[in-house]
Amino acid sequence: MTHTRYRIEEAGEPKKFPPEAMARIEKILKRYPTKQAALLPVLWVAQETWGWISKEAGEEVARILGLAPSHVDGVLTFYTMYNLRPVGRHLLQICTSISCHLAGAERLIEHCGRRLGIGLEETTKDGKFTMVEVECIAGCDRAPSMMVNDAYHEPVDEKKLDSLIDRLSAEA
Amino acid sequence: MEPVLTRRVGKPNSHAIDGYLEDGGYASVKKIFSESWTPERVADEVKKAGLRGRGGAGFPTGVKWGFIPKDTKGKPVYLLCNADESEPGTFKDRLLMERDPHQLVEGMILSAYAIKCRTAYIYIRGEFYDGARILDRAIEEAYAKGFLGENILGSGYSLDLYVHRGAGAYICGEETGLIESLEGKRGQPRIKPPFPAVSGVFAAPTIVNNVETLCCVPHIINRGAEWFAKIGRNEKNTGPKLYCISGHVNRPGVYEAAMGLQLKDLIFGEAYARGMRGGKAVKAVIPGGASANMLTAAEIEDCPLDFDGVAAKGSMLGSAAIIVMNEDTCIVDAARNLSKFFSHESCGQCTPCREGTPWLYKVLDRIESGEGRMEDIALLERICNQMANGMTICVFADAAIAPPLSSVLKFRDEYRHHVEHRRCLVGPRAGARAELAAV
Image 1: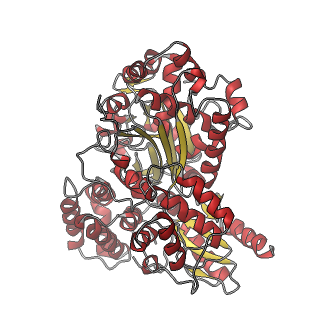
Image 2: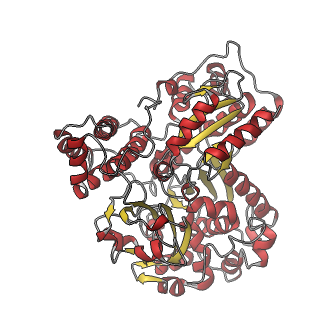
Image 3: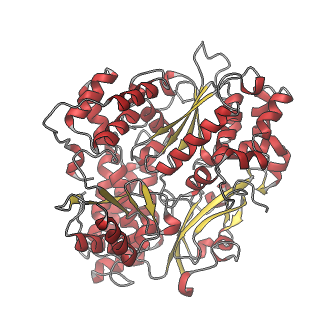
C-alpha cells in the first residue's frame, strides 16, 4: 500500500450534493435499518458526482448520515477504490496479481508508463490518464487483465494497450 | 456431465428474465409455493443434497442454515450473498452473475425462505460494475414478475433483495469482514463466537453464502437432493462444480464438471484446458486460489478436485482457482508476487498479520532480487510459523503463509540457488522492474 492511500486531499470549498444525487441517497437509505450501512453506497454517489472524494465531500457524507467525519475518513482510507485525490479522465487499472503476473503484467505497466510518461499513481499533465496497479480483478483467464474506469479490457498486450490509449487520447 | 450451473451461459441475452423463464427459470420458486413447502423442508433438501459452500471453506450449507436460533427474539434474519470474489485466480462468480443473474436471484429466494429471511443483500465487489448493473436489472425484473417483494406468488411470503457494492478490499470476502463492511465500517473481521448465525449483520442472525452455492439451490429443489448427491466423487463431495483454471495452459477459463474432477484432466483434458502452452512441463500448481499450498508436478497425479481430495494432498480446494505454472516460472518470484498481494490486503487489525505479511514480502523480494542471505530461508519459515494457527482473528494470516511456506518446503533447492547464485534458476524474473510502489 502506498502512503497516498492515507491522505485525503482538500477540495478547498464545501461540497453539496446536487438534487438528483440527494434523491439517490434518499433511496439508498431506505434499504438499510441503519444510516451507517448506507456509507459505502453514498460514498459511491459522491465519487460519481465529483470524480473523487475530497475531505469536504467526506464531511458532507458524514453530516448526511449522522456519522463522525473521522469514521468516514477511516472507511475512505480502507477501501482502495475511492479516489482520495483527482484522477485522470481515464483511470487505467492494471492487474498484477499472480495469473496476470505470469502473463507479463509488469511489462505492461512499464510500457504504459513509458508511453504516457507517468509512474504508478500518477496522472498525465493533460489530465487524461492515471495509471494504477490493482489486485486480482477476476480476469485471470484473460490475463493480463485491466480496467479503464468501469470497463474491462482483457486480455491486453502492449499493442492492444497502445491502440486503446490512441483511441482514448483522440476522444474530446 | 451435462452443464447445470453454466447451462445458459452461452445463450444470447442470457441475463434477461424472458429467456430465463422460457428455460424453466423460477420453477423451483413456483414449486415450493404451489406445493406448500415449509422452510424446514427446503433446508432439509439442501442438507440431504450434501451441498458444501463453494466460497472456500466447504462448510455444509444446510448445516450452516440450521445454526439460526429457533427463537430469534424478535430480530429479523438476514441472508447475505458473498459476491466479493477476490481470491487471486477466481473468476467463476463473475461469470455466473454477468451471464445468468436470475439463477442467483432464484437461489436467494429459496435460501432466504429456508431461513425465514425477509431482507437479503448481495455484497458484490466494487470492481464488478457490470455484474452490479446486471443484477440490479434482474432484481427489478423479478420484482415486476412477482418473484420478489410483498406476498411472492400469493404465498404470503415477502422478500426484499438489494445489491450492495464493495469498494476494493479482499478481506471483505471473509464473512465477518463482509458483515462489518455492509454495516458501513472498515471490513475488519470479527472475533468468533458469536457466529454470524447468532449475531451477524445489525446484531441479527445472519447467513452468508457464496454466489455459486446459492446458484446450486434451485437445481436441488427442482431435481431433488438425490440427483444432486449422485453427482460427484462420493457422498461428502457432491454436485456440479465450477473450476477456474489460469496460468500457463492452452485454454484458461471456467469449466463445469462433477465435483471431484481429476486435476490432471482439468489441465490436459480436451474438454478443459487442453494442456500446457508450448508443450512446457508443469512445475507447480496452486489448486485453490492464492491462499492454498502449492503442489509440485508429482503431487498433481491422482488429485481429485474436491474438498477432501485436495485436502488429502495437504492443500485445499478453496475457491477452486487452479493456477498452473510451467517449468520456466521462478518459484521465488511467484511466492514474492503472492506475498505482495497479502501484504497489501492485510486489514491491519492483528499484529502478526499486519507486520508479518510485509516482512514476508520484503524477505522474498530480497531473495528474488539477488540480495538474499542463506538465513533468509529459515527466516521465512520462522515468520510463517509465528503468524498463523490461531494467532489472529481470522484465517487471512493462514492464507498468507501458504505461498511462502509451501514453496520453501517444496522448492527449497530453488531458494538456495537464488541465494547462492544471486539469480533465478530459470533466468531473470518475468517482469523485472524497479518497484514503483513502495510497500
